[in-house]
Image (cartoon, rainbow, N blue to C red; front, side):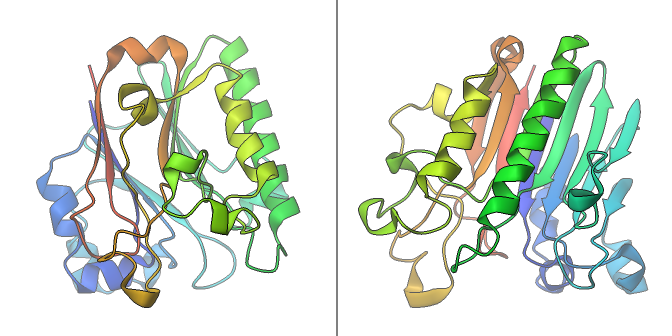
Length: 253
């Protein structure tokens, strides 16, 4: 099973650059997009024609904001939009899909903002998702969480950790919540396979950061520990353009 995640920073802009052609040409079983920033009905007929796979869409109530979409080759056994919590679900941040007992969360985690305006909301979102996953795992489900976590977990996951200790996305309390997932039965699949590898998935548009290699690893695949033996690879496609994020690919047996 091949799963690709990508924060496209506006699906209409991505389609305008033909950026999604790369993703569809990889022939993924599942493609998870975050920050689509549009309702599906806002796409033109030509843009809709470019979406080459069946899909489910979860847009935010606020226009031009947030939103996720999941594309698939095989119809899921179950589809759930959101997490069952209105305070988070109004922002269109989660789609759950289930295949053969494996539940895939496509998630666009909140951004804490430069002024820390949304840090508390972000931490509450992490807490709610972890609680939900705990309930699902007690029912015997295996889980994959993917998307833009909006947090770099460890110093290896960003170019300038010292300079960003007080920046949202690398605050101790944000990093602690990523660690809580790892302490509760999840594995950061990329870091388990590549403990010392330095690669990034997001670069600010300012100051030629991408060309200068000044980035952050914000996009993850967290998988249930019991699924880890099925993980063959996690690939960060840092050379793929079209967004301030790059795609990340999980290959499962």
